[in-house]
Length: 420
Image 1 (cartoon, rainbow, N blue to C red):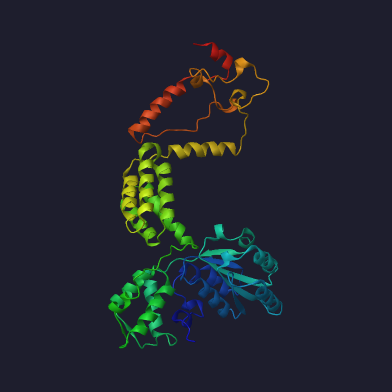
Image 2 (image 1 turned 90 degrees about the vertical axis):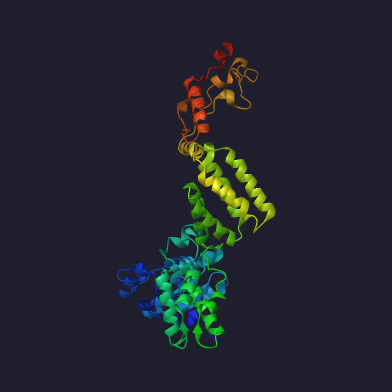
């Protein structure tokens, strides 16, 4: 069976690697590891098609070290046992593990001691952020390196390398400039995707000339880093929310389009509702109801029509005044209780014991309620809420708050009850 183009032309030496210059060129740490013949257990993370497994294999070959491939999803403990047995009879066996973030607890426990004592050197590859997706016990035993999407120039270099490589297209095909540009624009820094398009385009032509019209047939769906299991998807959601927070309508529309492409109405809805409360908040409280209505409409009609109410809501959120006073207030309270714990005033308790009637909460005296102190006495002067002047509505709230805070609140209910 003929192997895929990307596999056939996989580099065997770091000098052949395209991209990841910060790791494999000059004083890059992986280059220095190879030059000094020292290798440590490592985790490579980054978007698909950026060369994580390729670099691991090239390092092993360049160091002339034996290596074995293992997939954390499909591999089992029996395979690991075979690898460990081989490692004990081999000097410095390298285990290159794809999808390392999918390693279950049982396999992790099985693997840990062999990494710990150096029986194997693990090089794990993952699209997920290891600081969130990989068990701390594995993570603490490995050095972590990030791989970046390839630039347009690097992707183009990879295409032309494939055209001339003896195991690739072996100079038998020509690639028009505009066709190369189309592949590069579509691949989004994913070199594997670019090579797959090149290979199928070469298969489709009969005159050995790969043209734009041929390429267009196979790049209808642009490669995207927004994969459910990859870290790139959360980057996309982060860019979406931050664009709205930064009042950039065009940026928000771009990220919305990317999320629509992924058909992910759930994530869009969650981010919009959170943004309405967190970033707009008291500057425009009515926007919450409008956002909720837009999300409900979008869910009812479904895509592609859902894009209409969603885009309207996003424009509304982007161009609205912003206030984070609400989230700052609760975060300040949460921060305090992490380090301090105070007694609730007895009259606020649901069923106070040994409390005289005149000292109990006055359910029938609404005139007393605004005069009572509600914070624990030791922190009675703490202020969590600090309003902003982001809109006329919040300015009005600020005036009300100022008046309320001018009043001296009391813990003496008996005395307050005597007032009229």
